[in-house]
Image (cartoon, rainbow, N blue to C red):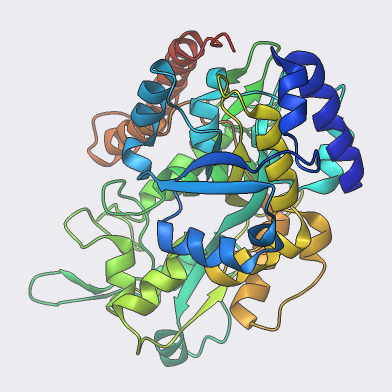
Length: 440
């Protein structure tokens, strides 16, 4: 996709669609008029935003004056809803794709007639498809945070292992030999990998959903309206991907299994790994800094997320950090003009260095970094997939109930997946009604 094509698309879309379009057009950069003040609300902390913004060519552009406000992820949705209701909302939001999906009815989608699906998919990684809805594209991806596998090099050396596991099935044998317990109490003193408990295994939902997709299933499928729950569907396979993923995940917390290695009484998975008490940890690329901050002396490395045997293609989960324009802003055209500049290579690449995260644009992923960790994160970005999560908190609760039902013995795997399917569809129906579009 040529940048000029995107710019033309923006002009066409908003010149035709925004009330008062002639006035808005006059505010667009390059018009020669006074500086446009734009407010951006984001879940990226202010110091990171300031470091990035000052390193971009956009910082020197006198056509815009940016006021950035950091809003924590936990309160972002409610603050945005309240602000838009009171006509004091931002001109741009900068957050992860799940937040954009949650607020889709309050966001200007870019129609496919102006930014075609082919152009979008040829420009951005596969995980960016999570920003597509039937009416168009909700946001412009900037960087991606992929799931990876961190592993303790000292523990691996003790067991004569020189690489991280490539397949999930390898975990069974590793857990048998690498898990260490106290003889007197049976307490685990060295875990192989935190799996099996939702409450203290960070990113459990993303891990399980990735396993489902690797096995040939989906968490949701696209519909003409939005999405439909699919976690319990077989997709013409001889097995249920949802059942297989949940069974595998929960087996490692079952004391009756020879590969038992984790339980809910242990610290959270990141803390355990950072302390040197777990051989492996599944985390996002952004967890790298958290591990280093917790234990600068930990001797660890990063590998690709393991794959399912027979998977049609390598996959990992990726969270997409993107820009979007809320409805109600009187400066929507100028806001899209600003986003157009901030998605340029000269603007995106400084953010990849600051966040140590890969870009979402395919052309930039071909420019491999020299840092070995970031280079592997680039591989993760290329393999990244995502699904349209309608409500982050709601789906977290559904996955938690699914895992806890099995690990507590209250329900079998099949029943837990069926219940999750029903709860997910109910959530989709309720959020679809709640996200009804607001009038611009």
